[in-house]
Length: 211
Image 1 (tube, one colour):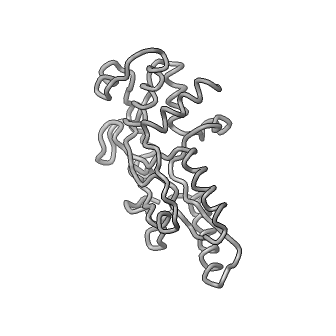
Image 2: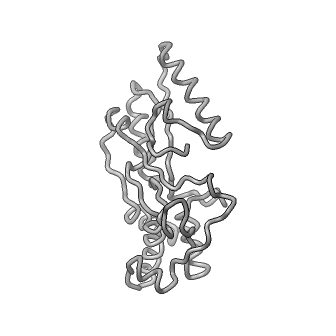
């Protein structure tokens, strides 16, 4: 929902649409059943902004990293939303999490059937769309034998461009997300998570080799 604290607690949960509300309702059923003494393992993950290998079938719903990769390959630049809601050009932030890390968390719970609950699945670190775009463009540039550039250089060379924030999204857009993963850590998962630069670089390399 459109909050500033992303923790798995009822008072912080404020779905923005029917899709989110349906997930929220299912979580309430699970919580109730667990209080009643549910014995089977049930693990609910609240995925943040997942990107990574094998998502191309999702089309328009694929990750921003996937679309940036294709924009750059087709047009030679990527577009980001301009300023809105107190955030500057491309400064809106998300908790971007690699599907490689998502798989590791899933397998952790698969290997620990005694553990149940509802867990945020993100990195616990919010990063700007500017960082995601720069990581994508630079990974493509390096693969082309070119040097990586700073965000300022990428903007100056118009490899990253900003478009007006859509009126239709104003007031309905999450400008910030960041998973509180303390509950995941308390459950025993101690793995590290890729930051955008490393995770996206790995993803771009995979796409260059497989798409």
